[in-house]
Length: 550
Image (cartoon, rainbow, N blue to C red; front, side):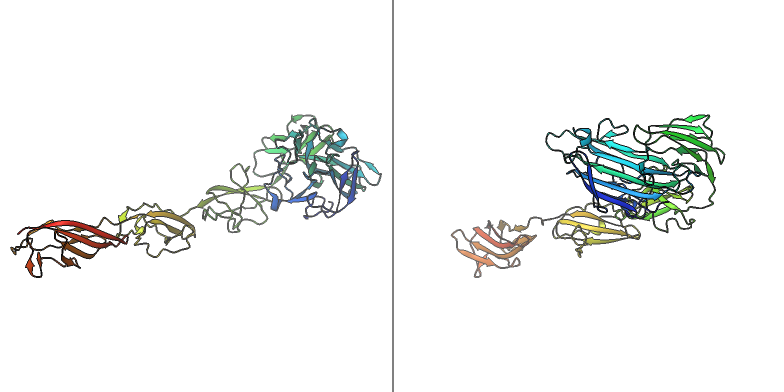
């Protein structure tokens, strides 16, 4: 197996990277530059899972499951060109034992209205170094065109489009090419790939690459099945125009789709063949063989029944405690559905409650699946807004909800719960206040509550309009009655000529209808109250009249 031919050490070791430009006649001028950022770009499964190509909307990672792949070129323009090549020796036994190299590729080409030699393109060849000739198949030369077989029209407008530029973008999703090197035993071979912009410098072309190496039986999937299994689903390589499945001696046709579902599962050791037909100019016709084998691994995958956590932080499905007690050696994948088709977006932070499925795959490809129920619970408070009160009454916000066991409650002035509220049982001011509830798991939630403290009821200054100071024990004295937030400063009493008869400086200071010990005549007198509203801190002046009857 050639070292790092599939970029699996996360670098371009073993590869020769070149970059340059394409001239007006379509000739590439390339120099060995090493990997150039954005023009020789590696993608990793650790960092780029879920990332899509902006034009084709297919994953930038190869679907073959490898850890790394690369993009050659980019969507910059200016007549750029790039290449990458790898030289390796075919094993000495390749003439007696099948030796097949496959590579996965995807292509994005902007299609302007140029001559063919001026268009963006992607080329791929395999070169026989010892004999100095190109291997006739496969040999790709994708020139941007609406007629490219297997390509689709992108619905994304080119980012570099200028006014009047009617160019479109065509793309080919990840596809597979097989290179059967039977007959090349011991020879030096070179994989060569190149991309280029259009010769006028205004349109781009780029491609994605990933190489699988040394597959002894060809790129057919599903040939290993794990006991017990009811059927076997064989899959041919991606991106071919036609497939035809046969039994081992090619005498019985079994199907013409990419996948062949065999039910019931055939006996172990049953052999099948698939004849693959490429799109014109996009690979080589080939016949691939595979043998169905049964695997009994005897391994166990376990998982906790329920994983508890908080909605704001979520839970991790990847912790060792989740699958404690399982056999070692499983490669784990995480899904949201029982059919295991939708991956969990971030298995280290699951933020929705529900059933999740962990599929463990052994080194032999046997899947084992367990279910975990994720329960994310936040403390709940059924807060009932308190009834408004009039100052100086207060509100106790601890009585606006029912306390739950194992929940602690703290009270704050701000929504971020950073400023503690000290008088939460005696709120005396209208405003929004905040209650933080925290569970034993550490889950917390902040609720707001509005407390309304209305102004006090209107004050009352009351003085009778008649009194009879005749010493009969009934209504003999005049005094002021005060209620509410009002302060008594004084009451002045005048006769009808404006002469001051009496000054009272306290509500307890009563008048017996005499001045200097002598009763005043019966008649109408006038009073003037001077005070202060102690809630609003405003001056209070009231006046009225009182009749003395003798």
